[in-house]
Length: 291
Image 1 (cartoon, rainbow, N blue to C red):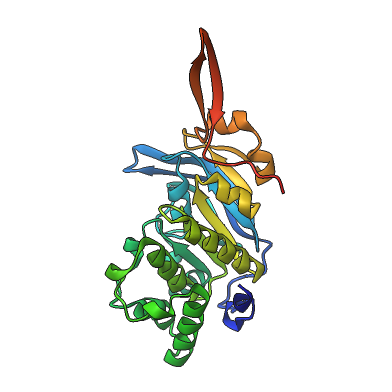
Image 2: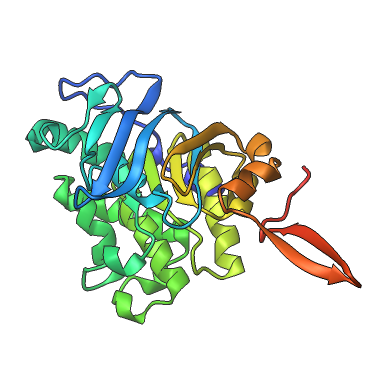
C-alpha cells in the first residue's frame, strides 16, 4: 500500500468556507437519540467523541443501532434529540440546508454502505469514481487523475468499463470505497465493511484501512466483526440491545471482557453434557490474538 501514502490528493488539505476546522474532536455526539416513526427506539442518549486521525469502531449485536448512528454521523437522517457537531459546527437538518455548510460537510465525510448495490448506480466503474468529484465541481482532468490513481490502488483498473451488475461482491466493495476516495474525505464512515467478503478481500480491506489511516484519514465503522476490530486496534463504543451506550474504551480492553461481550450478545454460551454433568462454554467467531 506504499502507493497510497504517496498520493498527494489523499493527504488532508483544509479549505475554509467560514467554518472552524481546527478542532481536536472531528465528531462529537451529545445525548443523541433517534426513533423510527417516532415509536421504535434505534439509539438512546448516545454521547461520544472521535478524535482526528482515530480508528473508531461502533460494535453491538444486530439491531442495536450501529447503522443508525453511522447514518446520523453522515447526515442521512437527523437525530430526534441531542446535538451533533462536526469539527465544532452543529450538524442538523437546518444547518445542512445551508449550501455552504452542506458542501463543507459533504467534502469531508465519506460513507460506504453495507450493501454496495445501494451505492452503485452509474453506467460503468469509471463513471462511479468520477461522479463524486464532478459533483463537487472538480475539473474533469483532475477527477480523471484521481479516478485512475484510486483504481490502481484498489487493483480495479481492468474493471473500469464494466457495469456494476457484472462485478463480484468483493469487486463491488472496492468500487464503492473507490467512489468515496476520489472525493478525498477527511473521515470515512464504513457500515459492516467486511460483511459477505471472502477472506482475501477482507485482508486487502484491513491493509487498505490501515494505509488510509496512516495517510491521515479518520476511520469510523459500525461492525459486529470483532476480529476486524482487534486487527485494527481501535477505540470502541459498545451498544447494548437496548440501544444504549454500554462502554467506550480501547479494543484490547473491551474484547477481553467476556462478561461484557456476553451481555451485549456478541458472544454466546454453548451448553453440552459430559455424562450427567452440564457444561457451559463461551463461543465466538472472534479469535483473540496476542500481538
